Length: 471
Image (tube, rainbow, N blue to C red; front, side, top):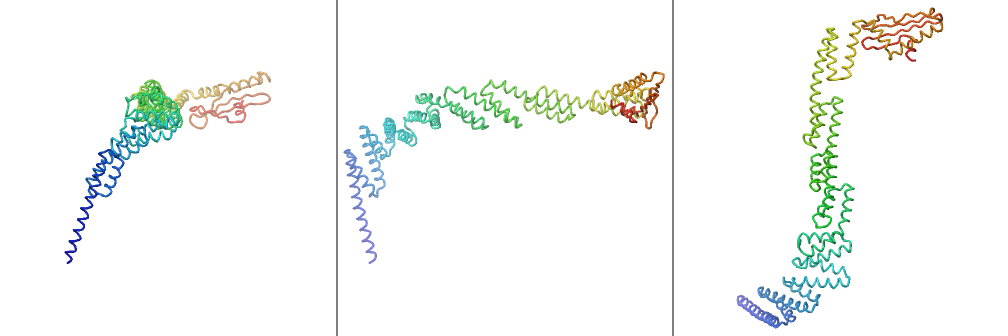
């Protein structure tokens, strides 16, 4: 009994499906008939009715295509009547490639109408739709050109440049690309001013990027832009050099020359100046006997100019100086041995030779003292007198002689006596006392000094002697 019920139900469903299929097929036939008779509006209604109810996927797809053609034909009719808005809507509903090929013209014509009405916002909206959704349109170069003109009038520099980039990159030979050049020339001075302002803030990278992009565009400012690019690379090179990034700095300098060969002489002068600074630093280090440090500084010049002649000469000078120092020290060592052996004349000769090779304070003092030893050894008494007579450039002796003459003038020569210069041994090797006495009827003057013959140091030993030195 249950099996019979199921059978009846299935049979009933099949009858319904067959009846429905026949009904929907009939709807398609009606739509198709109306379509073939060019009755597109009712045909579209029947196509919609059929598509919404049919279960036949393949026939539904066919109906969709035919319905699209109905919209397209209606669009062509509106298009012929120059009813651009209606035609555009119908082509949109057609949703086919050939409909899209007509839509760009509709949007273009609508934009033209809006332009006559000075409705710039609507004009741009229509242009935007074509540029965004109808990217194969042959009208795009003209639309870009028109939008550039509008952008220039609205002072929208960025959009104008962006559109010109598209024109130049995608339509380089198009007539509208060439027609747009004068409008870009009008904007370039403003961009160049902005770029220069960026340079003043030190933002060289952004400035450079803008200049390079601008230089790619055909314009009457191309030469100026190339020169500005070179200037920016020059500034970047200066920055890196100041930060001691010599390799990077040289790379930027070379790019500056590549863009503008006139920069070569300027850059060469900069490099020469920098190298000379290294040479001056190295020379000062030599003067303070920092020889290894001097070589390191000289070698920095090679990072700027390979085999820089002055640096090569400086390093050679350091190597010679190093060898001279070694030889000087060897002479000193020999002289010290001779001095211990009391061969002072031979030691003095070696000290003088050493001083020629390395003239330090120590060696100068050593030459001076050795000469004094020789004098002291030969005739200490006369050498002591020589020292005191020439002390203070002879002023002490002059003052004593003057005092003696004054006393003679006052008391008469027969009443004034002097001992002259008397030299006596003192405590310590090469230490002597020198006296000069002036005797008068009223006052006696006793001058006395202690002398070190090696250093020629003179020390007053009483108040009156100190005073004669103070005058």
